[in-house]
Amino acid sequence: MNRKIIVSLFVLLATTFVVAQGKKDSKGKTEKTPFVWEGANLYFLLTDRFNNGDKSNDINFNRTKVPGKLRGFEGGDLKGIIQKIDEGYFTKLGINVIWFTPVVEQIHDATDEGTGVSYGFHGYWTRDWTALDPNFGTKKDLAELVKKAHAKGIRIMLDGVINHTGPVTPIDTVWPEDWVRTGPNCLYKNFENTTACTLVAGLSDVKTESKVEVALPPFLIEKWKAEGRYDKEMASLDAFFKRTGYPRTPKYYIIKWLTDYITEFGIDGYRADTVKHTDESVWADFKTQCDYSFAQWKKNNPTKVLDNNPFYTIAEVYNYNISNGKIYDFGDKKVNYYENGFTGMINFEFKSDAQKDYASLFSKYSVLLNGQLKGNSVLNYLSSHDDGGPFDAKRTKTIESGTKLLLTPGISQVYYGDESARSLVVEGTQGDATLRSFMNWDAINTNAETQKTLLHWQKLGQFRVNHPSVGAGVNTEISTKPYVCSRTFTKGKYYDTVVIGLDLIIGKKEIPVGSAFNEGAKVKDAYSGVIGTVLNGKVIVDSEFDIVLLELKK
Image 1 (cartoon, rainbow, N blue to C red):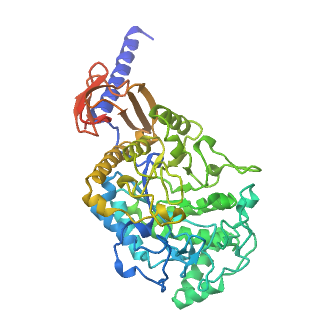
Image 2: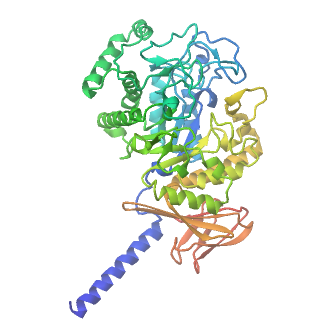
Image 3: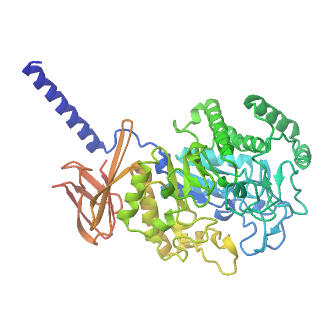
């Protein structure tokens, strides 16, 4: 190769490098910001406890018994969620996924599990998987909710229960013996006595392991006939079993009923309840049918498709920790749920990890999620509907909670009221009822301290939703004290990088940016709005805050 050709190639390569760097720095991103499940900002709410949008549906099926404190229906419904979507509440909070508790028809009566008279306000006591409970709303409401959420770039995740039905009451008939077991109670010492058993006394456990074909429960047939939809439901079941070749065993009926919500409404994901209490093959089959139904919905609704993301599934495997990698150990059996239907797992370890400093927390999650868990993710949370040991039960660390949850790699779960310091300690409640008070809208509207907390969560949420690198990127420490790190994410032609500074001094501060931004780049602190320029590898930000969120200025 002669000297002239060598020089020409060198110039070409150098020019290409400069152009690529210039494109990255001048625009900040090489394509429109994509939605990335692994970095999603998810909002989890109890449908009945969030917002009452329709007071006319507050009482149904003569549910008039006096319940224990926070153990009855309180009026929240799908219309209430729609109302807040319309108001832009979720958008301001940087939420791009909403997961709400099941809205299928619940048992009609109440029961007492030892914590006071309780109704199925939480949605986990199913009576009929094919119908919505009128306390929550109608299928028309659900269709409107999905449509309006999608219009704002928000995905909808439903909550799927396959493991159990609702408790038996004088009104609510027990399912046939070939469908459910009513004992023994689970001991949680090995695989069998965690799966082939009832979670609590009186809660009928579906025989998901059964290979014996079963007929529909007589009470369900009678119900469908009374509602005038028996023929339609039977034809739909016949078509499902003919297409799949599955035997008519309990799990396949329920899988069919749950995936119908994908085909009909175009929901984007399922959070699966009590996953470790069934054989893992249940969820592998469930995901297969979820994918089929999602493809069918996209085919039938080409103008409504948001992007090419696959259907997403998150497993609630109680006590799964990110440190376990892909394995959950029952003692006598190890299961990889990531290979059996799930792309994400709820991480029960995060609330303890949140006790650590930022450097340790961010490094651990970046290494694991970009290493052995690459291509999958975890859902991090600090409080939830059934975890009696939240990170900040008395709501004294709401700013720190927001910072750690929303800036840690992984999917962030904002449990309704985390962002507004909704009380998790309610006098007179028993058990998990204390975690399930009604959303504190009055405080959001009138209390200055609540509004300050909410604004912090909104700023961090907006930063996260605008930058997939925050939740799905690689963390690189730039400075230990004060703590400064960069986060970088690449997918195809898309590139995104940010710099995060925490526990900084109030006022004028000098932030090193490492290799995240080029010399002379214009950057903006998304937290304060201050604009700066990279000089000698640093940016000066003069703000009243101890946090800096640097992004390339558009």
